[in-house]
Each structure stands twice: as C-alpha cells, then as structure tokens.
View (cartoon, rainbow, N blue to C red):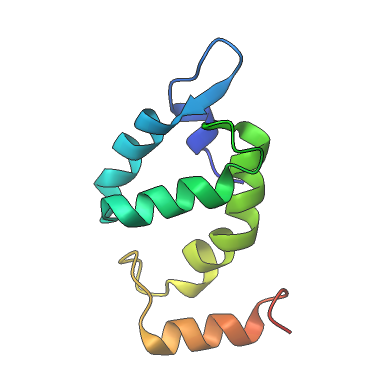
Length: 94
C-alpha cells in the first residue's frame, strides 16, 4: 500500500485535495496532464477529492507492481525490457 495518503495534508474529512495531490506529484517527473489523468482516474466518485480508499485502490492496481518489482534499476522509469517482464508476470494482464 502507498503511504501517500498518510503523508499528504488532508481536509477535515480525511480527503486529499487536487492541488495538494498535484504539488506532490509534480516532484515525481510527471507533467500537469499526466498528474491530472492520475487524479481523474483515481477519483472514483468524481468529487474532486481523493479518499485514502480511492488512492489505495488506484495504487494497488496501477502502481505497486511497477514501482516495486518491475523497476529493477530503481530509476522510477521502466525500460521496455522492465515493462515487458512486469506485464508478463502481472496478475491482472493474464
């Protein structure tokens, strides 16, 4: 599980606002369009906020395998070989 929901400031009802999410992800080499896409996909109820559950579901499906096991050289970018190997092993692609 990702710790992003535990380290980012939240609203009074324990949600992450879009601008806070954007600021956090702008430090990870993503452009504003990519960050916006991630937020829109993760925001299942389309309320403009991310709950811990929304983020954790997104993280489990789209990030965890790639971040941990697939990024062999630890540079946060997947080479074609890393991606191919990861996709082949992934439980959701089969």
